[in-house]
Amino acid sequence: MLKSSRWIKEQAESNHLLKPFVATSVRSGVISYGLGPYGYDLRLDRTYRRLAGPPALMDPHKVNEANFETLSEDVIVIPPGHFILGRSMEYFRMPKKILGLVFGKSTYARCGVLVNVTPLEPEWSGYLTISIANCGAWPAALHPDQGIAQVIFIESSDLPILSYKELDGKYNHQDEVTVAKIQQG
Image (cartoon, rainbow, N blue to C red; front, top):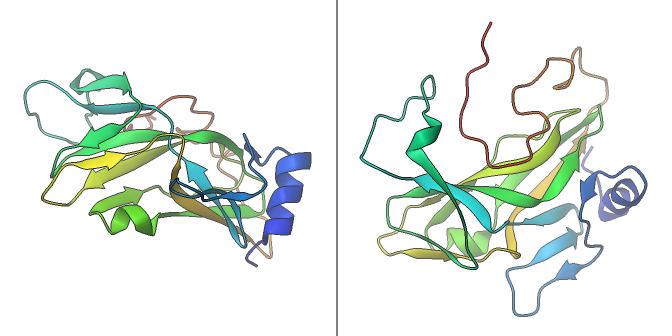
């Protein structure tokens, strides 16, 4: 069942579903963020990672951290055909029966910017690492402290056999922008 703003507010205030929590939808002069009718518009943090140095093969089995530099800026500019890894300002703590689905903001999509985040699994905790790609022909500006994506929360009718925490998920409790990694044996 899709969860409403009432449930999101209750969970954020009593069970720390997400922090910091903005109990209204902030819209004036910004890309909207905060509580919506059936979701929460999360914000982009100033810290991000981008590729640096000579071109190299991007293989998820062998991602080299040295190929990325970490930056912090008031406005993030992505050149055409490039991507960055950003981070949410909000820290999430997912309940065991809840799955979060994240969708990019249409304001950015209309500028050629695509946002990708995988689902927030049951009992996953951390800041979201957000892949943001400029598919347009011109440079694109991102605005930290403003909305970047919306998360909706869905409750399962049953508990999972194993939660993300119980599976010892490799991205659990991430505090910073995290590059791809393959879990070893």
